Length: 210
Image (cartoon, rainbow, N blue to C red; front, top):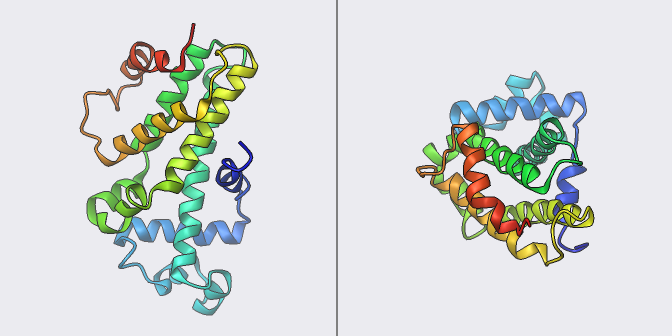
C-alpha cells in the first residue's frame, strides 16, 4: 500500500494553511464561485484578499498554481469531513456495518455539498470534466486509497474477512465519481435516513460483512 497511498498522504499533510494562505484560498474560492475559473483573474483574487498583485504572485507563481492549491484544499476538506463524520457518528467499537453505512452517507453528503464542483459542472464542464474522466486517475486513486485504508483497518480489527481491499475500494470510488457527474439517480442523495437504509440494503454486502 505504500506506493498507492502517496496522494492520500499528500492531501492529509497539506494543511491547515497559515492565516495568510487561507485568506488567499478563501478569496480564490469565492471568486471561482462568482465568476468561474476562466473569468477569475489574479487581479480579482488579489483585490478580494487585500494583497498587492506582486505579493500574490510571490505566493502563487501562476493562476494554475492557485487553482491546484484550491483543489488540494477541497480534497483535504472532503477527507477531513469524512473522518470527522465517522468519529462523530460511530466509534471504532461500532460494527463494520455501522461504520460502512456512515462512511457512505458522508461520501454522498460531501459530493452533494461541494459548491465549487456543482458550479463548474454547470457552467464550465470543459474545465472539470477531464479531471473526473480521462484525466481522473488522481481522483480515483485518492478515493480508492482512502477506502482501502478504511477496509484494512476494519480487517485488522477482525470486523471484515481478509481480502485484497483495493478492487472493492476502487469500485466504490468510481461509483462516487459517477454520482458526482450524474446526480440524477434513484439512490437517495438528499435524505440521510433513506441513504442509510440504501447502504444497509445494497452497499454493506459488497464489503463481505458476515
